[in-house]
Length: 203
Image (cartoon, rainbow, N blue to C red; front, side, top):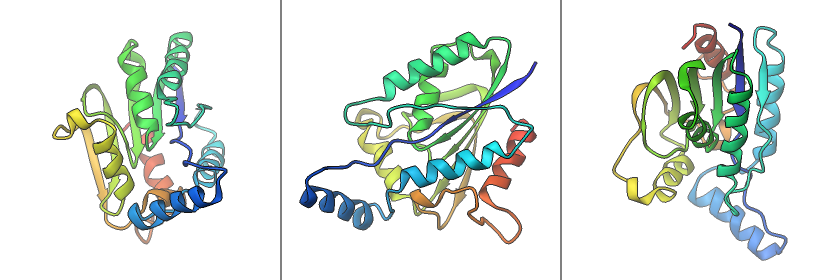
């Protein structure tokens, strides 16, 4: 059975047409969450990198990227349609930030037999158990934004954590915006090469 890679990017940065509000938003991103909200650049770099790999058949989820109003539910419905309309394929997910919640929310509504794995960078998701397929979460101690989002978006589950068939890789010094394919995690390997190895090894 052939395998498709579903790539789900994170949300778009908050913006305002009013200059003073926009300056305040950027100030909060930089000084409270320690990152530069250049989501479009991040998204494009990952897209270009996956397109270079002939062994993968990527499906890029184009969703609104809006947290306000809440666009995650509609995005999850898009993923459900992809899974239901391609039942003769296996699937691996690659998700960024809150794209992880979109993937997991969609998978919960479908037959998970065809889901063979998930790789999530700086994941933002509601705590739950993952047992039907292997998952790898790539976190960083410097990713203040993901830590904050995981607490504020699901306040009733603030003391819970995602458990199950998960391997968690923790890094020391990668900001939320630095989870890029060419980021050197050591002298010999980029972040993309690490992820590619995991995908090719079926996680």
